[in-house]
Image (cartoon, rainbow, N blue to C red; front, side):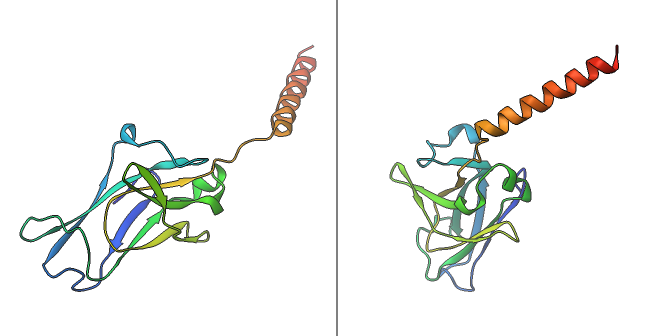
Length: 153
């Protein structure tokens, strides 16, 4: 499954369910995202419903063996989010639960071992610019404008 800035995949061991099963990764509409976990924001469009459907058409709610869910969140995220705060969260019973997945900052991936499927999102803390950063940017803009003004005289 491709997202705007990355990919998501599920790897299942042989016979993870008693029947032949199809795994679905459904990208969900961002306008339906429940409130983010406290202090975090959804990372880009990483909001999914993972689903397993047996060959008889039934939704599989539990697995005999866990599956691996990997999300590549893209290198651009590093400039907007505190990378060490990124994690996969599972939505159930009206709240988000942090999954404490393995973060690989070199590969820009989160890897989780899941015993079942649900709705998942990738959340993290946004990097906020300090007041000093904004003041310095404003000073540079003023200096550039002043220099441009003098060059025209």
